[in-house]
Image 1: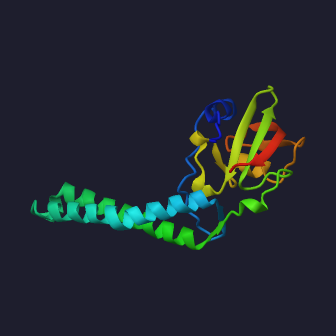
Image 2: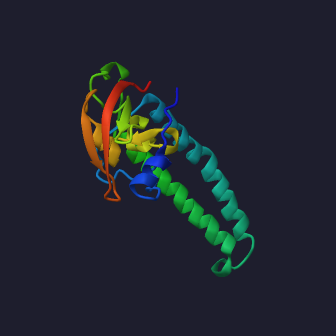
Image 3: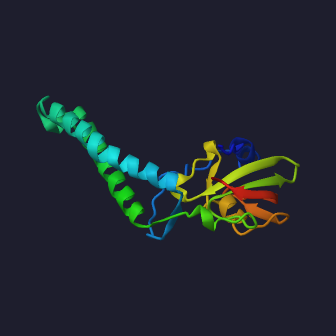
Amino acid sequence: MVCRLPVFRILLRAAGKTPPREKGRQNLNNKELVITPEGLKALEDELEQLKTVKRREVAEKIKVARGFGDLSENSEYDEAKNEQGLVESRIIFLEKTLKNVRILDHSELTNDQVMVGSRVKVKDEDGDEDEYCIVGSTEADPAEGKISDESAVGKGLLGKRVGDVTEITVPSGAVIRYEVLDISSAR
């Protein structure tokens, strides 16, 4: 079951714009990241694809571009080298991230408190109900209803219990007030 998140309604009401995408954000301080087994597999699959397929594709583009002659004015070569840099940067990021993950054990989840791995149903001041899946930052995808435990809303909901009311200040400065209606496993 996929959580649905009416992100745009919330964001438009709160800020009038879409926040920066959280997915792929760098783990600059090398702290432990909590991740679901599904999220771990997705990262491992992406890393494998980059190392085995994408690297070869980019190397071939560089080889072809070199054949066009003078490298100082060869836009195809420059573009391929830039792509190579992006691929290598992503590989390094994924390798570092995978060294710092803690796989979420679904048996640790409880339905009495919001934590990473929880599905939480909330009601705002207007009586509108929303459902969020709290995930680690590398798995966040607001369009799919998965919000990061490091986002403003994620942080504001962590540790809350059914019946709790919380006020969350979003990056735009607006304050959203939520009442927690239900907590379950996001599994």
